[in-house]
Image (cartoon, rainbow, N blue to C red; front, side, top):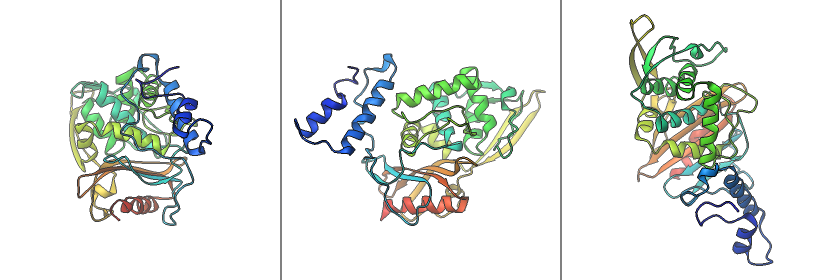
Length: 322
């Protein structure tokens, strides 16, 4: 039997210990134990032994969604990073298209495994012609640091920046998707499968609100990630293929940060990531902090339009301070 340290038991053994020999096991317990076994089986052989798993994670029963007439998005959740409480949950394990929220994983990999000061020459992978795709307007031959590309990835949601980061890190978009999926398994995001670094629609590019919480929680460990997602405006200067200097100013698409949408009293939005495609609808994940310094990750997936997206998010994060 594979195990993580001494803290993981098989589903059957765990249920026996928790419920007593011969006692009836609740569906919620069986569900959680089944997910735990799935996470263990998905670990690479060299990661069988690890730190105690789930000691600081929110636990969701996977039961019926909480009812709220003011939350009409397909999925939504609020997770406390400070005390591991689930403040609100709706369809948190439903696999859905994440659109550009994907880029949180791309940023996590770049920060965790890359050299942010390294200069990168952008290649043809940055030429993205899909209608409506968000871009930071970099071109083949442009030379930027990895850190600059991260701002282009996260503020204007540049799909071109995501492609450039992926090829730099892994040699190809496909190779980087493999890295993304390996990292997802490493952190327990077992319902996630990535196909690209930016979130443009592919049939099997899917994740869940719960897995996105796991990914965001990992990324928030890095101060530079917090700095990037909390930046409203970023002026950038770099050289193009001819050696000429190019200057741009990238704006954050998060309406809480720009002040377009009011944050509920008692909360401060640290930053986050928006995402929109036809398949995904309107999506948003944010990190926030209350007046006591306690932090939260909140996710809304597949709202019908942008005003609805922020109304849904405001309604669920308001539950933090009620």
